Length: 550
Image 1 (cartoon, rainbow, N blue to C red):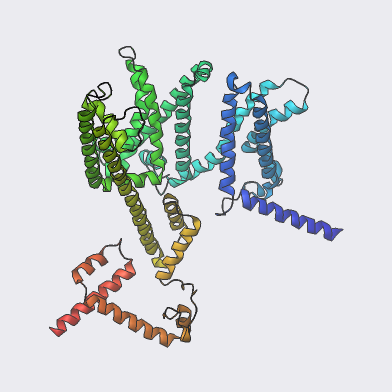
Image 2 (cartoon, rainbow, N blue to C red):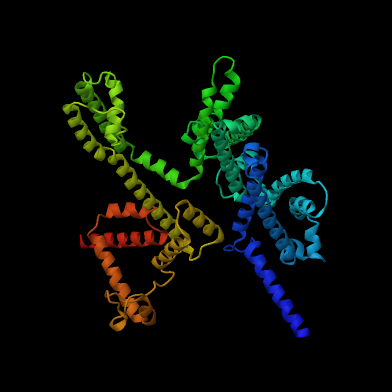
């Protein structure tokens, strides 16, 4: 009986530790802790959206059962979360040192918030009383977000305790080595409000929803403008911390005139113009420009930033393609006007009106609202449509090719960074975080990242390449190369192979342009420090040899 109790106790400890390590242990990198917290965060936000939608009769009255099911599912998820946290409290370093860890967890602020978030539902289910007023306590679920926010704030303050106030603002709104998780939460907060405000603009166009939520839409837009205005001024105020925007006034002006700065301004400008000038002009049409807030999301997408880089790099070629396109549009419009004006004076009244027809013809869209009826007009339409297939494809081909090339360049830069990081033979925790962040920006999977790391280690000589080829005689693969595994067991053969390799390198140096090789070796983006030193040594040796011959 005692043995059975001991084994059950050990099993309980193993299960408890496994659950804690899997879902709640922040010290373990590749567990489900971040995913679990992110899921809970999304559930909290969805609950807040549901709470708002419950106050819209046109939505709630016909879907009351669905709202109830969602509330029950949410309650089950939050209850399971609370029960799991209560169960693993003895494993949590925050409570493990207490005499009664679970009681210490029970009276902690976050546990009280978690309990209050689910308590109204249970009270309404088990007590015979009208407790609908307690449903308002579901708003307390918002406080659950502080579970992720509080550690991030403490981490941010610790990392920036010796920094100026302006630098702290800069680190909050921009990615820096001291930004930590608080910057990611800030970005997520801004992205959420961008999506919410744009959805509000879209829903305003639905008259049945706008009728019931007119005041709520105004309040929501005001809050969104306050948030985006605060973000805008934080970015402008902290801009001089960036070396590109040095200067009290000029630096901030350069920051405000960047594409992202202009987009941030356009996201809030319609609100202020309408509020300040409504008595002079009817500026209600500016409300539609609130949809420009969607462009703010470009700041948070690495793919969009790569696309902007590509457009900037390929702009001269794009200008040539656009010029040819405009030339064909104008030529087609003139020919269409000449051939069709007399036959269809209402549709081809003038050349500007014919431009619409030429564009949809070149784009091979052909809406059918304007089409030639004369033989000459139809003949020119056929030619223009065939030309349009190729002409419109040119800018698309340029962009797709350049974007692919840009991604290749960025991955090569990442490989060079890996070489630099591996010079000391190890990758530190900070370097690992930088690598993972860069891999995420370049949309590399974990498997692809591991393959790049292995490749860099093999090329730096830190690891042996996997020998997948069939082995030939004397350790040679089918391709004729001696395997590293074979060389590691035969030092004399390894030395001989090294002499051969150095001899080949000397031959390459002797037939190459020394000045160009020297420039290449001096650029840290091209070679690692070890490779650069070897190249310089070979160049110096080759130069001395040439002098002796002279």
